[in-house]
Image (cartoon, rainbow over all chains, first blue to last red; front, side):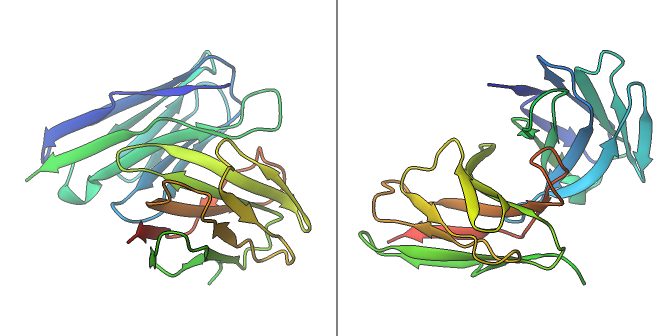
Length: 111
Length: 113
């Protein structure tokens, strides 16, 4: 089945540093979504991307829909302790009636 | 406010018991989903339903059962046949087909005593 691979699997960074993570698939995607899951809570939608090359920001977060439509990137600037959590990419491939989640990137911010 | 509610937040089960996790949504979404999440792991699909009175097995349906008698409700029963039920269970919903953006509830943590 479809695999959405996220990299890196985990990150440990100092408060104030910038963060970059990515998500790749073997298929073309029509939509890329990024979710954040706080510890012990359900994932919350952060950003949605709908066309190749699109760059969208939500506060300190910026996400991009890759030109090939097989990848997406999420950047967090000037990280703070509340950025801690697991970040998931997700979306539907170009064909079929499925919705897939990535393997997740766990972020730890050290004060 | 519209959203998805799951109850209880924590649930304890004795071995051999069935337990039912509640999921309710007032978003008027057609589709609902149940996922299981183990520590440090991603989301695994248990069951989903795209319309009332219809549901489909996901990747790990064994030991679980669901019903969809009302549009807003999609309860999950963890049966005694599920040998390793301790996990974090997440309910989600989406407007229509399975391709649509999914929105999640706060989750239920199930612990087996």
